[in-house]
Length: 218
Image (cartoon, rainbow, N blue to C red; front, side):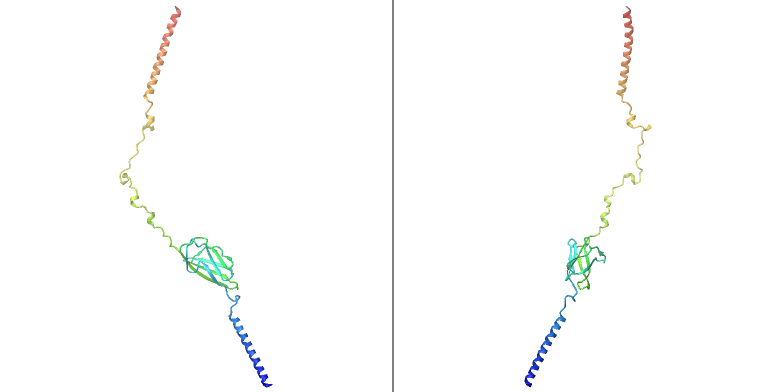
């Protein structure tokens, strides 16, 4: 009887040890496995990407994609001098945050600064540097707006010290050349001929009057 009881006790002890070992292993596995509720969200991708070189024509919006849906997005854009570049109000599209670029960007380096609240309620933030391709347009030189000496017209001869030519005085009496010319001679000749013809007609009529009276008396 003692041998049987000893074997039974050993079997029970071994089962208890195995059960305790399995429970410990499961507890360790659960403790080491991160749960989604305890992990913060993270930035998955961006457009433009970090350290990317883009053209100003192709950059119409900034797009940030996270590993889960986020809340309260905040996005700003700074140029090389640290000045803030105007952007549209950030909007949510699932796990994405989109902000419109409202004006063309000049060539040079830029930095996107973002901040959101992840799905577990913790705020996360970051920065994305990138560059707009192209070289700044050169400023116009002052020589382009100047006139060469050869293009300046030379002054008239009288401007070198000789007196300016005097204007011709107007005709005496203030009359114009057309008025001083008078009436043409052929008009005066025609008037004289009319006067002579009229006098001849009158004299001839006066002579014929007495002749008619003498004829009637006879």
